[in-house]
Amino acid sequence: MKQNRLIKLMAAGAVSAIALTTAFAQTSTTTSTTKTDPVTNSSSTTTSTVTTDGSGTITSYTPGTDYISFRTETSSTPVKYYYTKSTTIVDSDGKTVEWSMLKPDMPVKYTYVKDGDRMVVSKITLQKPISTYEKTTTTTTTTKP
Image (cartoon, rainbow, N blue to C red; front, side, top):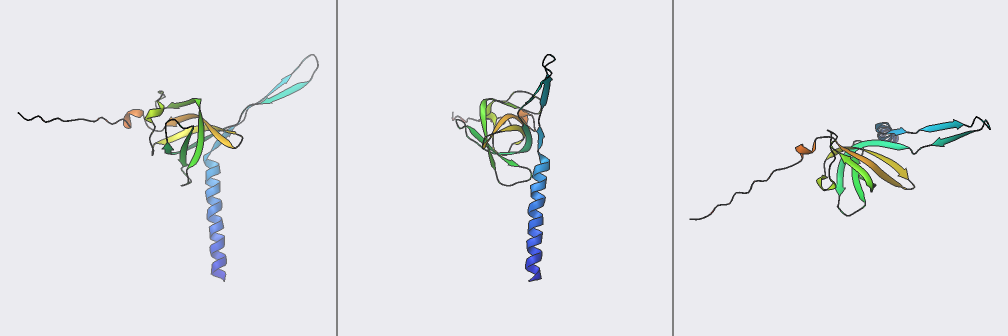
């Protein structure tokens, strides 16, 4: 009976540790601006959108769809993120990358915002320069005399 209880406690601890590492792997930014009107002496506060940074590996991307899936460094389950026309992709050198260059298993960092129940990616940064992913193919043709 004590073994079952110990196993349950250890499993709960492992799940908690995974959840904490996922939370610490992501960073958030919130910007608030307060303006005071000198005439009425009233102030108003504006809060901008919260962005979150994450890192992981591309698990799937199909051109023509509106989403891309990433597997985070702390979780083996892929997560679906949506993208828009304003989503930018750059390599580690800061050069713009075309969507057609994205392939599964590319390590990336990404920035996203929560829009209702969807997570929308605003920027994807490849961990390596795009030149490391480009493959050159050589075709040899043999002709008979």
